Image (cartoon, rainbow, N blue to C red):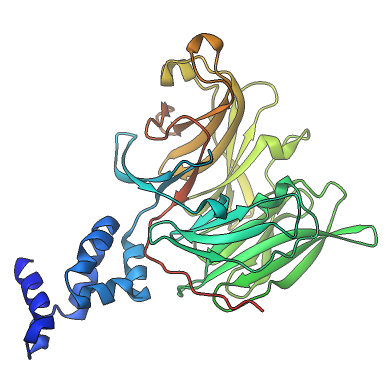
Length: 394
């Protein structure tokens, strides 16, 4: 490697036969792509102009992304503090070994509401629809893209679950899907919009469906990482959208759900290449997991977990105000609890969050020590060098 660095540097002095000094492009790409992103940004791109040029290309960013594995982006929602990324260095015996990298996102970008291929979708939310603004952010390369105004009819707390960012199959293009609720002559409709980043400067309506009076019984759509987006509602069950063609292509039923407040008791998550649903029992603190078979269109019981022994997991008898299942990683489901500390534990006043992982094979509950206690949210995320194209606003 020392010889390569020396030759590459000398090329930009006075070496006439540069073809003998550079690594072949087909060899250089996979070799550089094996380096950690911190090394690429802080060291490798300063070795020579050829390396710097290569590292800046979208082709190289996609090569790195294909070799990368997802970790956890830990968003600190306390004003003035930084977020960080937990790279999964190792996973053995049901335990995660993380490596932490401190990151930051522009405070003006608001809170994270989705992540895809290294790009965060962020929302600066207000009660005034005209002032609500969405951004795309790559926290690694410190780029931020302001998005066109949202096609908002109604403002409210559900806005964060009406958004998705996806990557078009076999391309490096990103699309945003947004589902709003519109009232027309006393009737409600779900309206589906799409925005192609770098191409569109306005949101485009692609479909609409009748909405019931209690239209708020919806869940955040799930992206399979390939070409399909699964939109879930009590009224229309599970609607499948083709990301590339921007059309509805299928439908699946819902699993058995509780009658009372189904959305607050139910969580839909993507598990590998499967769609899972976790339902809380109304009688006790147990949770049933169901898996959808795409071929038959039927749900089957997969696992029951709980009640959780928090004293054994973290040594504390927690007062749980809210539990939210967030992501599957391998055979572990990551979840966040909002807790109210007991007065004798000498914690600061107010609500706090803690994160745990539950292994469905060993039934072991583990507190994720690498995620700080406080006002934190986690996102399944992959650090990347993907750049954001510009949008020309009209």
